[in-house]
Image (cartoon, rainbow, N blue to C red; front, side, top):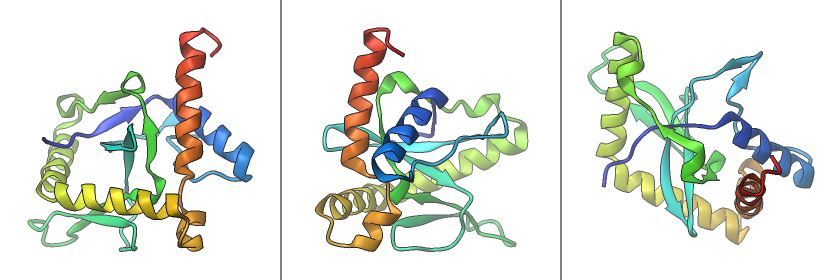
Length: 172
């Protein structure tokens, strides 16, 4: 099964950020809006513990233990184009995501996104393994540095469920 890139609803992300901040005093859920502009955000959705998880695609280009670099080997000047940041992944319901339509992008951007997507699908087993490893390590709490540097997955799962309930009741 292919992986796809998605956009995530901004209000949903704000809710998750607020829920994590309320409990931890900070959040690792990534920003998607800056100065009243919506940042183009893509991600890869994976199934983890009964939830679909959104793995942010970042412009961050330094290799770390819980990210995978997106490399386009045919670019002779700068092969590393960004990374998948697994410690910042968060749960999302299908209602709050939409598949990225590359055809709506400018021609150069369309091709760039398509090439990243092809690359991610060429390493999808590695992506799924790193997502599972990161998730399980954070949940187990065996590495305090990783736990601090990651989203609180259990807390966000609770918040995702509450958001869905509140929306269905018309409370949001």
